[in-house]
Length: 341
Image 1: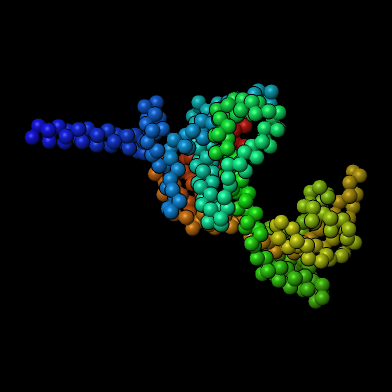
Image 2 (image 1 turned 90 degrees about the vertical axis):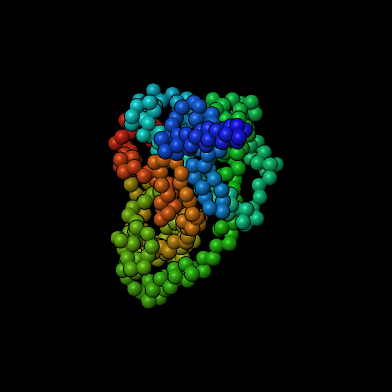
């Protein structure tokens, strides 16, 4: 009987301890050294993505400390800027950084899964080759390691895991997406619109307003005046070879398909300028596709103060005051460069 009672008492103590830890981590958001140590030992999940896996509180806090260290290691005094996360507003700006970290970790985890589904594998040798490029920029391995430690508190392995591998996975997944992208429907649409303004002689601005995609459609496709450097290369190369009043053939760019009309030319301060209209049909970008994939994911948020916005496929603040603070971040920056991306 005594053994049984002792076992029950021990179980009760363990249960109460675990209850205290769970309440401390999730409900009250305790931020003391004891809990921070426990969080490193026990990977309490902050977020869980169904069929993909968790993101732990300790992982988020480690990244937050690295971001904080980066900003605090910079000398912004000469720019008339300062970093101070200790004030009430500074704490709010740090929370915004934390939210950005969580969103990036979610995105990285989903990209990793999507890449694996497409058979994309990144071996350690390939990662090391990419790291060698960074080493070359810093002169030698020791210089890179010193900078990583100074700026972020990272080792070289941290750099590989937190930056190199996720970036390579995103790049390869993006390449795979564009290699397999069917732009047939978009190309058929732009060619139909091109025929309307060329063979059928319909009014260019009217067709643009009715059928073009993007903000310029509101103004009949009017892009205003632009210098060559202000235009993407595919548009610039064609626009500067056209005659006034001429309508271009279909132009393909990374953004989609374009038909241009050159309205006017002029020279301003020694620089040639063009006034263009366009009819534009966009192609679904990698970002568009990725957002769609993320919207299909079920994301459960366990930590206090955040919620998942499925429509935007992003973590957002559950506190309306913090959301308002974020919306007015420029006004609340107080010269703090950490508010800039």
